[in-house]
Image 1 (cartoon, rainbow, N blue to C red):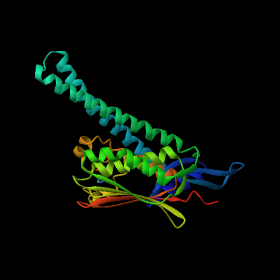
Image 2: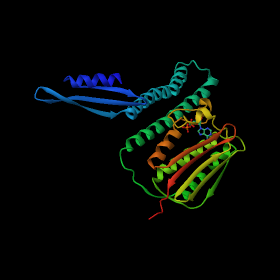
Image 3: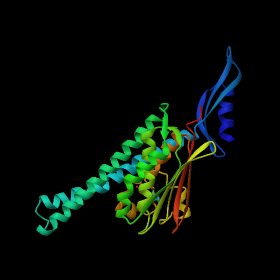
Image 4: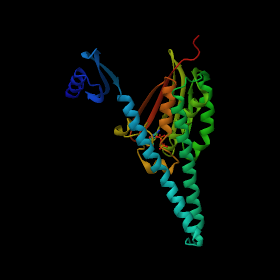
Length: 285
Ligand code: ADP
């Protein structure tokens, strides 16, 4: 590697230096120093730090900031525009109600977005802390979530079903509730009239399976890899029309990682989607 050769020969000539170089798919920060004995250079010490992950994280952070600004600006522009029309009496009497409705919807969207952004940043901060884990009765929690979302499902003509058996995981109750809510909510919103959502929580060997399956629109194969990214949506207008923020699955992924749970997404366009989380059992001694 020519960059490496150069930094090495500099060090052997008595000059310390540092540089980030690429070797295959990895990025390394190299700190090179000559080893001196009196005035003579006896050798060189090179430290290699892998910075691939760090650089990727920085890139993601930069993209996130750019996306947040854009996502917040869209509803704010609508709010500002409609409010200005009303303020200057440029809206016809019969349009005022409709404009008010648009302002309200955009404000609700903004609040939802901010809630999710705050949630993600809390999860980011908590990443460095060790989580407080408690015994969480997963099946009972799923039961509560399913009952809570049933009315919402009915509004969309979607029926919810719960299967499985009592099971305990070690985790954080609020976070697991969030996962259940986000997954079931998506399974309803990306479903079709007369469709179903099947939630399963059950012990399986030394693990516990949580699965949310729907008979909805599915996700085209080329998007499957990316839907856990922040703000990534397959169909922006459908997400927006159903109150999506593009952050639900990013939150799910974060929470799964904090629980060391394996997260699997299977989907077929036009047929449906199944998202499975495998937790460690929490009732082992
Ligand atoms: P959103 O708030 O837009 O729903 P999510 O992070 O929850 O954001 O999901 C990201 C995207 O993944 C969605 O916009 C949608 O395109 C797709 N998606 C998520 N869940 C499902 C599902 N159950 N069926 C089909 N598509 C889904």
